[in-house]
Image (cartoon, rainbow, N blue to C red; front, side):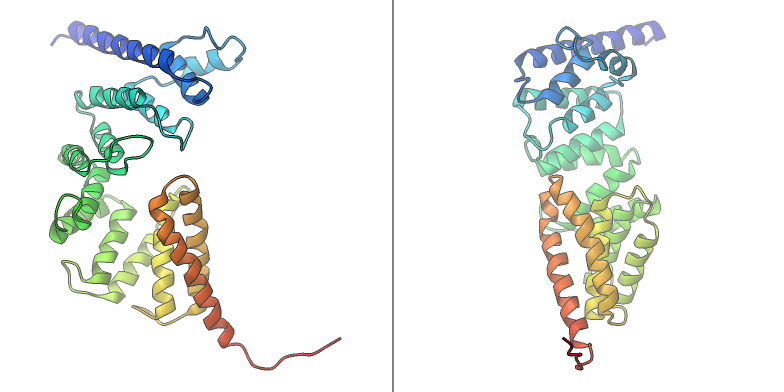
Amino acid sequence: MSDENASAAKTSDTEALQAQAAAAYEKLDRKEYPELARRLALFTGNDADYDADEDFSDDYDYCDNTPYNAAHEIMLCDCPKPLPDFIIAFVTELMESEIRKGNDHAMNSLGAMHYDGSRGFPQSFDKAVYYYTMAARQGNPWAQENLGYCYYYGRIGEPDYEKAFQFFALGAFKGQLISLYKIGDMYFHGYYVEQNLEEAFSIYQRCREGFKEHTEKRISGPVYLRLAQMCLAGQGTDQDPALALRYFHKAEEHLFTVVKEGDVMYRKSLEQAISGAAEARELLRKKLPGDTWDFD
């Protein structure tokens, strides 16, 4: 295809997506979804309903309306309220338009939307694995990590720990901290590899040392929880209830944030952090001297 034809095809695709956005805007309950309504208006350049919005023109000038980024922006609007079916269909078409161009990030993202089944997306592990595999073949480290999860938990059949380890290893080699701590889990439980609690603890510590200021709390929360539990029980390290308590507090802080933001799959981990902290405090209390100081 010549550059001229490619440019014409791109223009045609953009116009088709903008037409879909305009149709979605007209169907949308704008009072129910104010953020989404504004985002769709920005996507189409329709400022008719935003005369009083002084920032609309500036936002339109700087708005990234590529299909992939527009889809992500839409999914962030009016959280955590479920989105209407026609919006889910529009987001899917935005992602599919990018997938047809070979965008591995769009492949992984659409897979994640089907995996989570959030915001009204139909949950389908089969579709998630399909899109993850497409992206993983292009070397996408997040997709490789996500496939590791699918095989680890047996989302499309029985758990396959060998495949899980292989995909987590690919992610870990590329700096994915979730992949790394999941390898720690496999050493902790003895899945595919021989159980080695010391190695598991060492891997979790390596993850903690790799945390940056912007590290997602959905990563740091589970890692702190694992470290806390091992310090409390003396697994792979010396028993240290004081250090365990500090780690439990870190885990609770981070996990509370992600659960509050709608990631309810972490609720069980949050409860474990809360109960673990109570257990660590009780162990520390028992170590206190029995003397008391009575005073008026």
